[in-house]
Amino acid sequence: MDLRAKLAGMEVPRRAYPSDVTDDEWGFLLPYLLLVREDAGQRQYPLRELFNALRYVVRTGCTWRYLPHDLPPWATCYQQWARWRDARVFEALTDDLRQVLRLNEARPADASAVIFDSRTLQSTPESGHRAGYDGAKRRKGSKVHVAVDTLGHLLAAVVTPANAQDRAQVGALAEEVQVASGQSVTLAYADQGYTGEVPAQAAEQHGIDLQVVKLGHTKRGFVLLPRRWVVERSLSWSARYKRLARDYERLAVSLQQLHYLAFVGLMLAKATSLNLLSGA
Image (cartoon, rainbow, N blue to C red):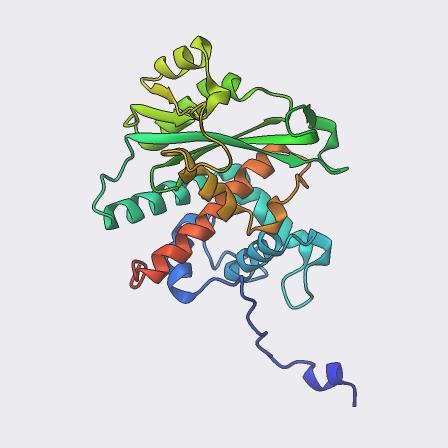
């Protein structure tokens, strides 16, 4: 008898993927993801399975239509992802997880210092219509400008074409940082791409003193720059999420929110390892 016929009408639990959320993680996530009641009549698939599908996509880099058959249909998963994206739920999750981890380190809940940086992602046919050419990286694509606290946790992300100058995004980053931190940030570190009076004035308008960390003229080879290495480490952490290896998104907001989702995953893993989510 065919295996499908044997299993017809039977509830067979699927084997968990490494990207699936744990029970403790789900207990923390659920209040943020409930845009409507979990038992709402229009809900055909468990919300946890829809989120697991989203995590599978961002972690493995697969396209939506290639989702495994033991997860909900790709169209349903994508529609739910779009609702979460437009509601900015992953920004709220990032903010609260960052505060939990900072308090565990005996730091103030809101950061007073941040580090700015950017990364350029190669474009794809889906994102090519909004791509620009980064002459320094010799790459056509999108640039993701980020701000992290001194522990490496994300505060803000801004997406532009790759030909946008880093220094030109200081104002937008500073504004997002102050919204996320409740106006607590007073100092920002950045590399030499942020040199000049214009970016310094843009940061100052939001109450932030921009300090450029420069490489000494006598230095050669790899040098670990003070503060700057923190944001480099954060960007390397996000590279574990294969959906962020290139810009596969039609919308810039999708790329932005997937970065928040990736950092939610990183911070959840850290909080779980520190036993901060039990009983959440």
